[in-house]
Every structure is written in C-alpha cells, then in structure tokens.
Length: 371
Image 1 (tube, rainbow, N blue to C red):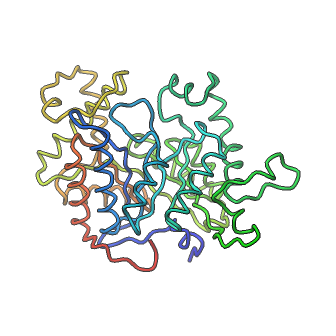
Image 2: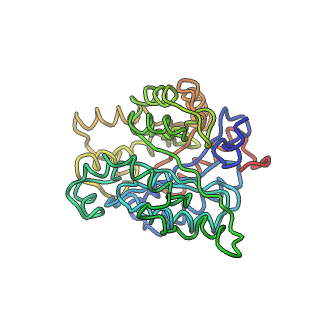
Image 3: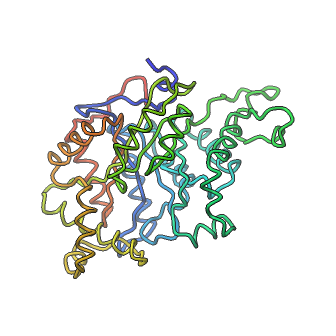
C-alpha cells in the first residue's frame, strides 16, 4: 500500500458504487441576473454537500477577467469553505504558478493548512488562466513565455519554501514561509511539519511528463482538452518515477457533467453553458446566459459546430445517464479519480446535479479513516 499517499489524502477511497473516488471542481460560475455573492453562497452549499455525502475533495480553479467566473482568488475562497466543512479535502485546481511569487503561494497554503489541518491540496498549473493582456497585468511583464518556460524552476523553489529546506548558502536559506515547518523547529515549536501535497495540472503533455518524472500526482483537464486525455495519461504513467510522495502513478481527470431530473432539462442547461463558452472563445466573455436565452440564440454554422464538439464531452442527462457516462469514461481512461465540474446558469441546478450524482452512486457520507 502507498502509505504516504494514503496519509496525505492523495489516494482516496471509492464510496458507494462509484468505481473510483469522486470529487468536485468549482469555477464559481455567475449566471445572468445573479451576483458573485450568489455564486459563492452556492459554492458553500455544494461544499457542504460534498462534505456530507463522501466526495473526496473540492477544488477551486483560478481564472481572471471573466465575468461569469468568480474564482480569481482560490486561497480566499478555500479559507471560506474551510469554515463551512469538516472532512472533504480542499484545494486549488489550480493555482497558476507563473502568476505568483512561490513564497506567496507557500504562505497562502501554509495558512490554509493551519486552518484545515491535513485536508488541503495544492494543485498547480502553468497556464495564465486568462488572456495575454490580463496575464501581463498579473505578472507585471510583457514577456509571458518566461513564466511557462521557468515552471520547473518555479516549482522547485515553491517546494523548497513548503518544506523549509533551502540549502546553506542559498540566497533564500534564511527566508521562511509562515505558517510552515520552521515553526516546528523553532524553540518551543509544536507545529506539525505536514504541508499540503503538491499536484501538477495540465491539458497537454508537458505537465504530464514533469509530474511523472517527479513522482507527483497528476490532474488532467479532460473537460476542455478531451482529445489529449489518454495520450497525456499514458505519458504520465510511462514517465513516472517513484518518490517519497507516491510509489505508483495517481491521476485524476476533470469531467464536465450535469445531471437533472429530466434529460430535456439537462440538455437546456448544457446549451446555456455552451453559449457561454462560444462567447468566451470569440472574445465576448460574460455572465452565463439563461437556458431561455440560449434556446432563442441564433447560432451561426461555425458556432453550432463548436457547440456540438464542446457538448460531446459534457456528460449530461438523468442521474442514471450521467452515472453510465462517468463509468464509461473511467473505464476508457483508467483514471484513478473523477473530478466533476457542473457549470450551469443557476446555482440550484448545479447543487441538484451533485445531489443526483451522489444519489446515483449511493454516496451516504460514511467514511473510513481517510478523508
């Protein structure tokens, strides 16, 4: 048994009749006629559901300059969710490392670990989570390629801050991320040296290969890069080298899924989310439209083609249909965990979707010693 991975909550336990652990990815979507406050309240409700029904983890994704996505500050949102949950793991899916100084991330997630000991994950990506102009504003530079190219070095620096183990003579040897391990080694220190496990996120092969070579867990964005899922997972597994973190590969995939009481309603919700993506991809980002607006919208031929391609990778329908789709996807990919993201105009629809999925798999919230 991979004891380190079990202890750190990397390897979850499949509950109910689910083939693998089920988790939640939250973009904190904001619908037309709704506010960011409404969206964040929905996030609390879904996190409470995940906590009570036995979902393994709840991650928040970093995005910027998108009116329909209120998750620009994952650490802030996770701190709020920590106050409303007890057992579900909380994490970033992910924090975009090139947008931030590694020391700042280490401090933020050290603080989260102090708030919710033993149940915080640090998922990292190398994309900006936005357009180029916004990335330049975030990073205070026009040389955006440097951030992605330097990702391995930034990652190594961040891990050093998390572990508080820069070697003697290093310029940062006397700098400590607080809260963090330095408090355990200070006179009178009783702080645990445990720190959040690091995950690498990706939608192509770069992070898959890097995660494998470092022996880290890997999360793949199947929900928007489905054509690359199996090649990336194959590359991760082939590149994997055992580490102190994992003795064997562990990969989760992000999956777009919406369950509704009726199949027709699921189709309506998915169409509205697809229209939101059409607008985003054509430089017109906005709030998530209502299903009524989407039904009345006159899609161009090119837009209809995009919607068809996009929705082909969104598992939707009744609870039984969604369960069958998730089961099939897990079999095809061999994913060790499914992280479900349900984007819809209404918070009530999103919450109901997760309720139906939990019901379909018989998730009762009963847990063993892990969680």
